[in-house]
Length: 442
Image (spheres, rainbow, N blue to C red):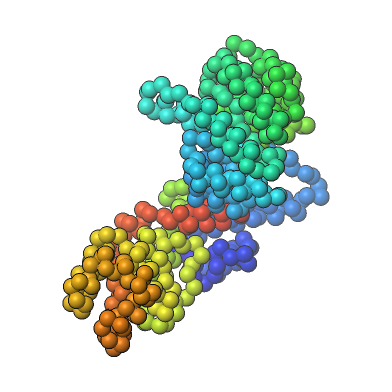
């Protein structure tokens, strides 16, 4: 394994070339997939830059979909990547993050899907009919649109029902006032077109007549089962829309390349769940997680072995206390606050601490209720011990809190199942950010 402590994997001064150079120093160690992927993408873009004088490669804008979870969303946005989220999976915290991101000038674009595709997948798995509340969907759209100063980077999806052309058209007409209101506010609308009785060209013309062609984006599925690729290309050649979004395809897919060629003046975008493609044994994202966990184990072991008053090395930036749960992480004994530590304990941990103190303190002083009230009256644990008992006794008891903290850490380090199955949110975010910045997902 690459020794992560030898360099800052997530530092601003660690470009791909530097990581590759470090990897080359260990020729007898099998390289991790994320190192290979970073090298591959680095070489690809280096080669393209070298040939930029000969030709200009045209690409579709890629939205990273499947990242409605807060940690994934934050990772991609930190790398300034375009993202696609859906209204069913995103929570209030995620919406606030999107608003904050869209308020930053020059940031990446955001595409908010209604969740109709996700609902169709749920229906397929459950066998029961599910209905999407489009009124709730529009509440999300309006909440975003009216909380940001510039809506030019926001795209939302018009109502549709997967595989049902007539119902999709009816829904779009039913909500046309709301859709027009969003268009008037500068929000771009993506209209998914379904195959059915009407030709795709007829539906396109109806949409342009109803909503205007300047702010609408035509959504076409990449799956050939939904619309055969030859038919999709023929539609593009005939209509040459202003903007097209190809649903469920990476920008390097053959159908995306064919679409770019078929309609050279059209603005193309697409979306794909690239995160899922790199999860699993031997895959870049999973291996990076494993390395970060191993690095965190090394750090916590160093913390446990640390002598009091001796400062540990810097906390790895990718960690968000993955092993200690709700406990705060302390770099050294001198920064440790006993009363803050007590407040962070669970009920069972607090009972264990009280039990440990019973051999040293009066019984009335070893209840959870009493320990939690000390801060209000005395400000610090040492002051209370000094005033209630003696100065020397305070010096004897205070280190017991640090020892108890280290014992909790050690217990969780040894809980292998907990370590291997609980990736911290920040570890996940930093992994995605690093791979995204190095264009591994593209």
